[in-house]
Image 1: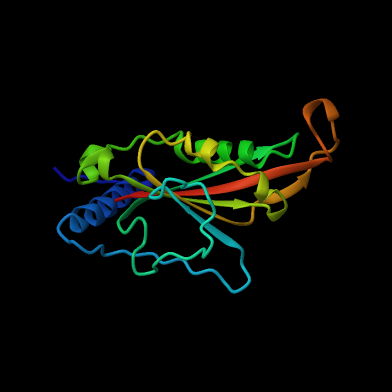
Image 2: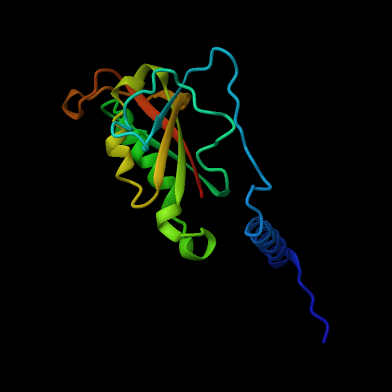
Length: 189
C-alpha cells in the first residue's frame, strides 16, 4: 500500500525526522556537530551569571567566559518567551513571566535525550531586559522558575519599555512604564 503524507502532516514528519537525525547523530560524537558561539557587537551591554560559583547571582566582573567552552555545548532545544509587568516597573516579575512563558508548554523526555538525565542537564538563560531596569533584576527569584539544571544567566540590554497608559500609585507605579523582558532558554548538556 502506498502511503501519502500531505500538508501539515508532511511538515511535522520532516521536522520530527530532522530532529531525530540531529539528536541521534549527536549521541555518537563527543564533540557536538552544531555549536553556537553568540558574539555581541562592541558597546553591547552583556552580563554573565553562573551557577558554578557559590554566589552565582553575583555579576561576574570580567563579564567573560572562555569562548571555547560554552556552558551548553550540546544544545537540544531553544525555548523563547516574553513577559511583562504592566504596573510597578518590576523587571524580576517580567523576567519570571518570560521564563515561564518559554518553558511552560513543553514536555521533554530529559532522561532519554540527555546522557545522565537531569543530573547533567544544563540551561543557558538569556534575558533581554531594558537597561533602565536591570539593577532591580533578582536572578535568585528568576532561578526558581527552573526545577532542574545547572543554570547560567546572561543579561543583556533589550526588551522594551512601553507606556501602560497610566501610572497607578496603589500598584507601585513610579511612572507609566510597562517593563517587557524577552527570554531564550537553551536546554542541553
